[in-house]
Image 1 (spheres, rainbow, N blue to C red):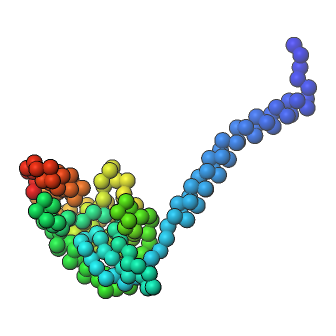
Image 2: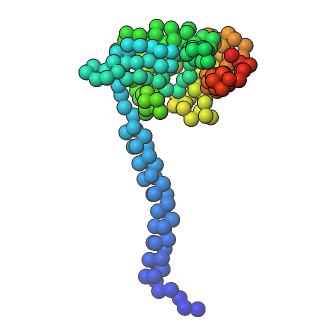
Image 3: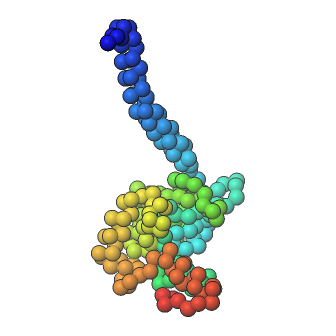
Length: 202
């Protein structure tokens, strides 16, 4: 048997270690890059709340700029009515009034994640007491933690605990025996009525 010269053994061992380490280093670099991109994608908006459309949608006026429509991140509030084929849900107006009581007329600095396909900024709405309006809406039974699409829109997992507490205390919409999540209402009620079918839930 021909033995491998010592210097080639050294090179082979060194290269072996390097190639074993390479995937780990690559994963670390990619992980750091992804984290940096995610952090960089966050942005803030500061403005005065000039309209509250429903329990999870409002409009702010940014000084010197156009108004921004805001969709509260991580929550979904009961729907308000939009004509005969899009009836509102129980607690839809109560949810709107609840959000208005928290933020209407206030100047707020929002933590935003992205724009949705309707052109709305998707944001958390911090309050002076350290909570967010998003959290208060869920804690008081005025909105669901948004679990549509398997929870892909849920950026604040703490909302799940707040929802469980609200449900246990029968707060707000949880006074009803079987409240219908808005994402089901839009599909099973609105879509059915728009197609001319009847719907058992509305």
